[in-house]
Length: 273
Image (cartoon, rainbow, N blue to C red; front, side, top):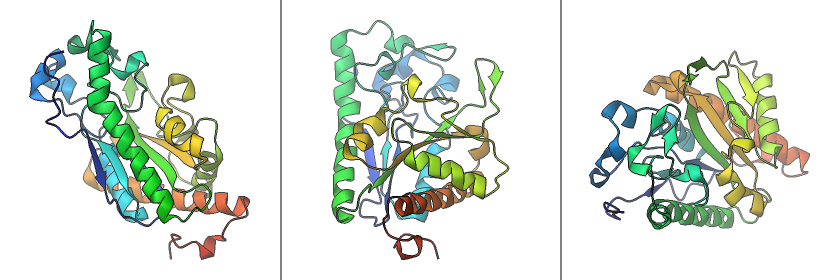
């Protein structure tokens, strides 16, 4: 397809030498579509809406990376060009439709054109994330379950005209250890937020690809966090949410390590003072 270019770096690694136990991922961090794609035939409002990216997710992930001393791997292009939380064979990797929108620039693409998108955007992201995981695991000195992989997303308050009541989704695939501990941490904190397991999406929706690709085969602790985007619309709110989630994650990982017979919480070098 015309317009495919490697001029735009598709992935960014922030805080690469961080020493904490977590590794953060933000697959839908950007709404950027290179000019050569003609905006995929969408108007400016659609290109800046939730169909193009996860508003607020990168701001939350960035602050969490600071608080947790964690590396952060983030995509630098719109999920409409390629959704880095989907494998190349998934139709939704290069979506022809998203919610109520048709994506003209993605409709009727040949198999070759879809493969080119994957080569430009997905495989560099996958390679960068795999490299970050291996580097972090080496720094962790072989401690079981580390790094703990945490993917950060946001979702729209209203989907297809239906209001969503859930505010924080704690998602998992086959390995529910960290998710269950995080749900327990949220309950222990007596949060007023509506926190639910595998909502508003779950593994049946194909949203846990990153966890399945990078965490499950290595036996790494993992969780996917979904935040309703009206709760993180400002920088202040995003930072506050990041602080809350970082605290839950620290509590949850310490609980997982105690349950596994690992280091006691007070001995963990990443525990908050």
